[in-house]
Image (cartoon, rainbow, N blue to C red; front, top):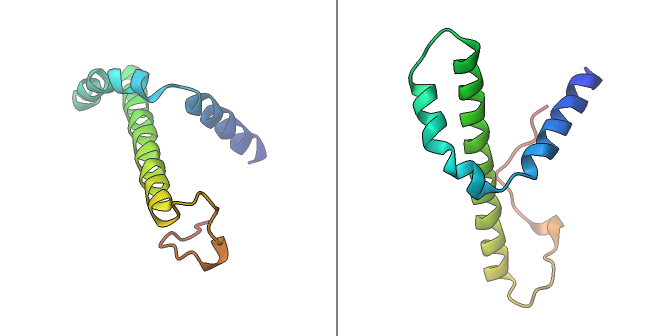
Length: 93
C-alpha cells in the first residue's frame, strides 16, 4: 500500500506544477471525449484527465475563496488563531 500512496503523491506533485490556465484550455477537448463513451483505454484516460482538470479547478477555487475570506477577516495580515477556527470539513480515513 505504501508504494501506491507514494505513486499517488508523485502524481499529485506533478499535477500541482501544471498551470491552471493550461489545463483549462484543454477542458472542452476532454469534456467532449469523456461524453462520447467508447469501451477503450483512450476513453478511460480522457475521463481521468477531465477529472484531473476539474479537480485542479475546484482546488484553486476553494483555495482562493478561503484566502479571500481570511484576508477579509484579518486585514492586518496577521495569522488567525487556528485553534478557534470552525470547519465543516471532516477527516475521513
